[in-house]
Length: 281
Picture 1 (tube, rainbow, N blue to C red):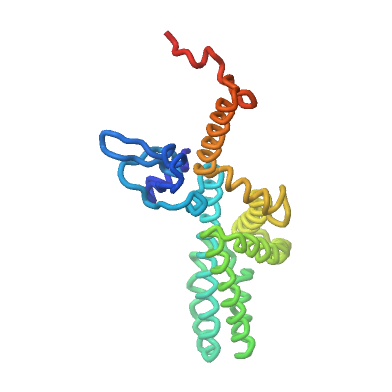
Picture 2 (cartoon, rainbow, N blue to C red; picture 1 turned 90 degrees about the vertical axis):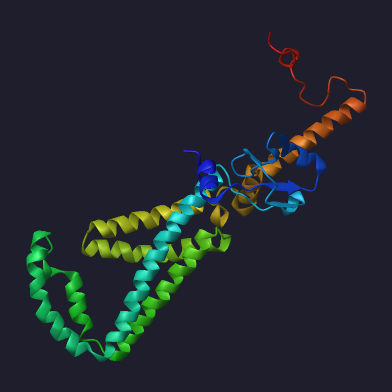
């Protein structure tokens, strides 16, 4: 799949006119439709004025190739964190709200629970031995102070999920570190829950979290992995279309310098094969 074209199709092309004339010439062509500028993401020439302009060093970072694929994966993780955070936030608010109506809710729960048994039997859920039901019944016996503390803990946990979501969605370096640390803290708890009971949901969450931690550390070069932040920045720079074109301009300038110095064969640079300069007949 061509992630660049897919992203440009959704978000539009990202063209830029650098102030450096030699570099601008490599990103600009005149066509029948007028001027066209090369998209920094997909590399296609797009008719019309550029979306931005300025020094090449001030150009926005436009992810492409493997970096764009990584960004898409991180945003999928961000969506998962957002959904989890919303669930925890709602749960925390509900827990706090029931602190003054435990007795009433307990009576309603005991009255309505038998009505769920036929449905639970059809899906293979044993209500009598359900840990969820046991936890709910136990919650009705907690003190108001304990319930408030539990609700606040859930809300704080939800806030951490929202912070993860923001950092991953906008590809912030601190967000990647934060996601690894917070996710790693809860992995032992998820493993402990599996020792009590194995369910598809628990196994799935554990696999997703372990895979996310390993992938973030390895692919984003966190904690010094694979060269650390320096190698990460170099990879970002090397993938930039402006960096590629700037290198081509520098190489062309070096070639002209060699010619002016009396090296007609371009000594010190790669000289194209004579056969390659001759058009095929």
